[in-house]
Length: 425
Image (cartoon, rainbow, N blue to C red; front, side):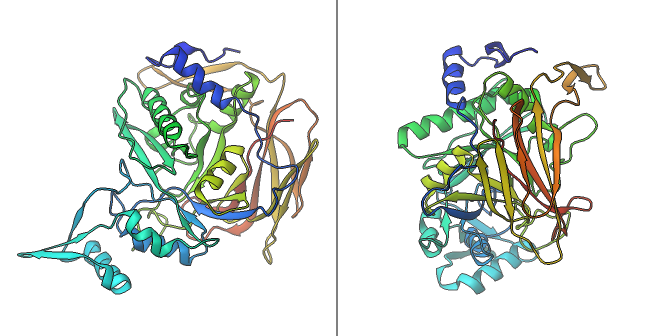
């Protein structure tokens, strides 16, 4: 097996990479042996867009929807902004823009600040610090500041969400997308160290424009989070014959080389709030459930860093627990719905061979790995599945699939699903 080396990361200095890799070399938690005192699950979405970038509604309308629909926290992650500047938005005389304005006026009329110049009506987009107090409610709802750091190179993208920021992180320059993402992570850690806040960086939709491969993620040892599910219909979530399951490839190689975990996040990546359907980027498709005693930004981020959360598109878990060698789940049953849980992992002694996959020009774009990587170790039916680790697993994670069809899903025959985080024996 070939280990990832410092030479993999373009111009990143060896000392910087070693420091970042050290941050990642922490044990994979993912499930607790005993719940924190007073800990509970909090539901949140960490990828959302508004009129501050390429969404089609006002931030207050978006926050209002999530609060009214049972979410406990929301991070609005517009592209390359944390919405602190002055910005006026021109209202179109008809169409979606006018529809958004009319709904906004009806819901928040007295707070709408607008001006007319000739035939042009503009509305001031309120900053998050201005509207957050009307939504934040202790123990019920919290807005967590965020940004989608966005870069492009040769028609592919490097998108990194940063959650619980104070200041905007500008798009980073680099000769490759991996180099850009590496610099995103460095910038996040610099702000984290400067502010003393817990900041979480998530690699977004790696298959969007087929932008990131498993090898790219392996070249980012400090990366701790990626989107295992994204509700945007153009992110190629299911991959194809060339692009395999990134998560298991990365987990296998990292843990075989004493690296750190990679945790999976489910998000909406919502943009469209007035039209609905499988071809729209709608709210309510994917979220995370974070276990911590307090609905506070630093507490939520710390729990995510521990891996004490799961991703979901509808399946609800009452508990995820590790007791010695046993990994156990407790599923909250819905009437008339059944559940199948797959415990997935890679065993030590796995076949390490891989072969390059080339594009039409003959360029190697990724690699195909053996079938030993990310196998189903066991499949268990019912609401109380568990798996006893033999000790030769590099990691184990669980995927729960229900028989209930996903509401407003966009994948073929999409069923409500949940993903737990990887744990080590």
